[in-house]
Image (cartoon, rainbow, N blue to C red):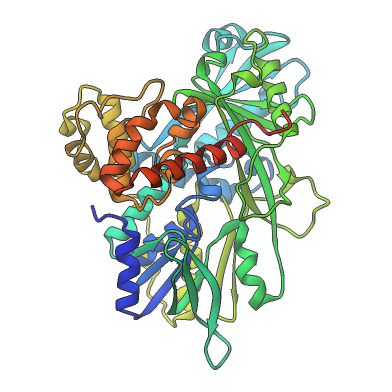
Length: 533
């Protein structure tokens, strides 16, 4: 697999200032999805991300690849069908990365919707996906399945399935697909300003490399602004309008033993009756999400507020009353900002639609909104608009179901020859065929799962060597999720990680100490408890 190399790619841009077919701005799931489909067309394409790949919404989602059950209730059968279709494809094409997960909707006396209505919706949901997973557990079987769940007024639970993923690794897997097909990508490179031709149409941009401080002028037939919640920043200059309502969703992560769920619980919060999840992820339990207007600077790390923390703890304590869940229980927190297309802030955030939209303004193609599950369809809609700007109409085959979202690996867990077959399956899901290279380059002891996680140090080493790691948080919060899963952001692993960073990134003692100080400050402020607690 071709490494993602920031230094090499920047040097190539300096030495060969060619005109690109497409430059994509934004390194989240939508941006890499567009890049992947553009590369499939043999277009000369480049992606620029102002921070790290998946730094924004795409590493801070609820990790769910779901079909949008709510859209059935709203009568949007077409959107639900598209969503469940994409979900099923991802499960088939990326086993070990996108995994089917059971969902339980506990029903208590007096609750609306009740068993009859909800089960009717679930039957439609399964039928649209071409599967049959819907069932019902009575209260006795439910309490056997979910140890410690509050039995008060409990009648039972409706069961169905969706899927779950490591959202950041999904971004990297798709990005690798694009690069293997001929695309290029740069992280920590910011689009400072747009360039225009004599007719006032966008034909390039000025990019600033935040690692070395250099700038470059890049020309392109089409520039695509796929920056999600940040889309108005570039688009306003050519459209004169702002359409994005940034909404913050926060989560808390606790040890699995305090809420030992094997399925996701869909629950109504006692305060506002919003649906909130308690679900298993990477050997922990995650509780979220909130849904609030985010008025802070989008370029600063978002973080959970004291009010959001109390809100989520209240739900956990209500549902698992004997587990003594408290602030002291929390391993970490994370908050992400979702882009919702809306100018009306009088509407409750949870009532806003999650549709995507594509705009073309003076040649700049912009896209925002939508869901993780349908990133490929969003990418295709965007690319269709971009190709129209180029005068091309030869992309109909892109919309064929024969095109895989993710190219399935042609190796099996047995090929990796690991004692831990579940680790082997996960490595193939996350890294594809590169899992062989990852295993081959592991040092002694690095292929054992790190305590309480499904990650191993061999992944840290491979990511450091192959995935444009510039900062310690790139490695611990996005390439791996160790900073979210271990106490104190993974402090106990620092000696082993320091050794890897010295060997693979050529960090000296001064660089390592500076990165540790920076990372620990960032983690304490944005991935742990809010200061007021």
